[in-house]
Length: 499
Ligand code: BES
Ligand code: MN
Ligand code: ZN
Image 1 (cartoon, rainbow, N blue to C red):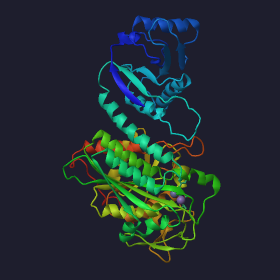
Image 2: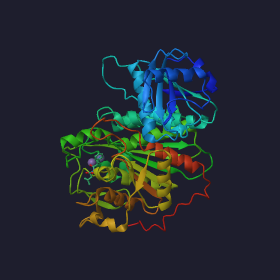
Image 3: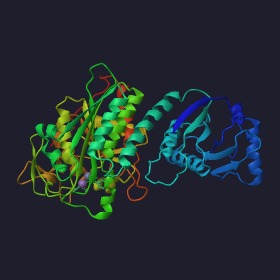
Image 4: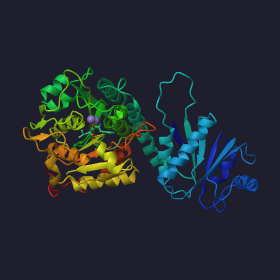
């Protein structure tokens, strides 16, 4: 679906003749008085008020065949002037649901001058229009194609362009994340990464295969996929949005295409959800597309740390000692703590390329869901300045993250009698322990980790990928691109987070 803008004066609303016209009515007011609307609209509202269909407590009303205006159908929706996230989503779902119910593909929405936060509604409209191409063979309702925003000035132009780029990225990300393990394999990820490079001249892609990963010494990364019939690989995508040689930001996504837990096998009900264990990798692919659409002046390299975690005669086992690319050794406590194993080697790889900073995004722990639920991603890192910038980007984009401590005090559960560390604690605070594990590989490179287990898909019901944390990541890079290097200071020395 695409959202377009069409500039009008309020007096022309009655002249529009869409199949469906959506008008927002400010909360606490039943009509449009004082807002410079044409008389015909006021009369239309009065008509429905007289009928008793529209009153002060009405949330919305669908009016079929209104007589005073040219629109064929009119949807009235009550909203606050400073529209909250929940209301923007409800309103968007209502518009989307109405289109579906009437089997329509287009609508017009008047953006009233009194609405602050209009961009929030635009993002929500895009979000609600998403459909996962399901695998039903029977005919399905028509897809929404276009929403035309009727606006009084062109103030929203930049925000609409931004939202459209974000939407393009989110659709790519949600499609990949929603695809089950038999359809989205590591090889499929690699193909999609190559397609992005074909589609956008600002992106180049390289795929590291098993042999190259072995030559690099990625003993932890490769162990995860050893039980799978699907070959392991590591797609690396380079987006260059600026010619100046500013250092590159590396974004690494966990892309486990299915996580059975391996030899430490998961139980059936939870295992079903593990088709979403590649939401991090999917977010990285979507991010690259969004950056290319926006032509944002930053340099970003995206890594999809992908493998399939299966039990097999050749699978890695609990007790195994692996040598990571960093040279540090890891004793495997649980083959189900596999995400950190692909991530730690990807982080080491990134560090060898002189990054400005590293961000990893991963459906890493069930403990994140227990701690923060679906409202905020768990944020951990070795740089307070970077943490703050990411928290702010989360606030700015309605995709919040909350900083958790990874003090050295939390490192102890990772002690191993045989190796440099274990890959999991027992009865330790799981989200933080995972963050502490990754911190050992980030060293003194500015690094942040987002645990998105609870935010990137709807656990249990709904079963659909949300596209998070792409809004946060794109917002962070947008904020970052607006800063000069001097304004942007990242301190790792003052933080005391290093183990
Ligand atoms: N992919 C899971 C984490 C997860 C669980 C994501 C539920 C989304 C929903 C991860 O690989 C995992 O299994 N983590 C273990 C770690 C433990 C063995 C230390 C967990 O959280 O139980
Ligand atoms: Mn696991
Ligand atoms: Zn996993």
